[in-house]
Amino acid sequence: MRARKTSRVRLFIVLALLLLLPLIVWLMSGYIPNTLYFDSNGVAHGSGTRQYFYESGALMLADRYVAGQLIEETWYKPDGTIIANERFKDGCGTGYYLREDGSIRVKMTYMNGMAHGPATYYTESGEIDKVVSFVNGQVSGGE
Image (cartoon, rainbow, N blue to C red; front, side, top):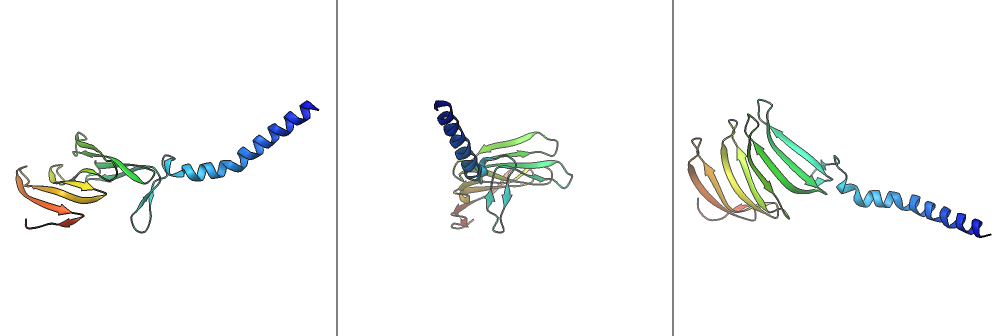
C-alpha cells in the first residue's frame, strides 16, 4: 500500500513538472541566448548580440541584449582593436558614432535609451568640433 502511494506522489510530481515546464520556458524566454529579435517598432526582445559592420566587412559595433534590454556595447576600429566598451543600465550609458576609418564622429550620453546630456562632435582629425546638449532625445538650446 505504501509503495502504491509513493508511486502516485511521484507520478503527480512528474505530471505537475511537465505541465509547468511550458510556463517556465515562456517566462524565461527573454533570457534564452540567441533569441534576440526586433519587432516592427524596433523594440528588442530576447537575448543575444546585434552586430554592425564597416563597409569593408570588419566589425564596427557589437550590442549585447538580455531580456530585450541593451546591457553592453563594444566599438571596434577596422583593424579589430577596441575603441570603447560601455555597460548600460536601464538604458543609461555612453554611445559612439564612428566614421568608416574608425575615428569617433560623435560621443553622446543616453538616459532611458534616448540621447540626454552632452553630445560631443569630433572633426576627422579628432578635435572637438562642437558640443550639443540633448534632453529626452531632442536638441536642447543652441549648438
